[in-house]
Image (tube, rainbow, N blue to C red; front, side, top):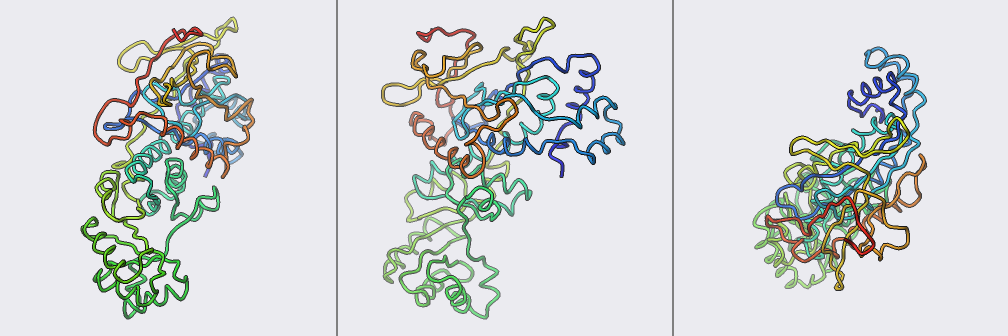
Length: 443
């Protein structure tokens, strides 16, 4: 599969026309932002810039891609030759991956010539919209879990490539592990999983299945209790594994009541340290409903990786500045309708009060604060560099970048006011102020 052809056709036809009239080489700035948050959300979580930085070196138009474009007649020969030589040489800046964002937050900016930046639109948006939707949902679930681990196991409910990206995004949003092995190999995410109902059904008895699992994996495994009868399965599990069994899993039924019954039975059998994991179409609301139940971890799949649980982040990619005929970078903006934009490249910061809680998102169209002196503006700067002059900035890709993003998420969410964690409908956790000027006093 070609990364370069994960591109909408109109990006190449715009390129073709711009090469024809000579505007393709004009310097430009594109910005990514969301006009609003999905219904019921009080903040979003940015995920995907690190994965985008990993994909960008493979955004190449090799012989196979060029030949297909020529046969399809999508662009002319001049454009085909330009694409054959394509390498992104610009700069990509944005919020640190894992950072909370709000309506209007300029979460990513792509600066370069019009030609090299315009053809990245679909790749940028597909990565950020998908990953940010998953990370935002994961963050709500981990907040509802109140410190109990959430484990991602949604790979069977989505496209195979989306499953891999979802595992990464969930980790950004606070999940502790994934069932997808490739995510473990690629990014170092802890992997989880032991046995499904099929393993129990394979054997002549539930006891035989438990014996086989313990023989292969030891008592550090998790035994699934709800194939036939939970109380009987629990007694069998402890008889075979002993009180040192690491954990049991419940996947159906009235989970709050069942968890309490299982906890009481485990304690009565001396398995006081055996943990209880629950699965079964969980989302943040179901997790919150289990807050008072003796549950130790949650396995989440369908409601994390599908649109019902992770509604689109609704991010857009808009041109906000372009070079004029005289070489000056000028703000540009759409002026009509409810999709009007504010022109000019922007920087953003977050005001934090003396107690360490965020109070305002500040978005400024104009020069940013001097490096090293953000305190003069009373804000915490949010922008970092991912790509500089076409080169990937170290520290934002691979396992290191993912760990960094997860750390940033924890710190960012801890900074939000308490109301941000409510699951009910409401306004964004903090207001966003968009302005075209800001002095050192913050006016």
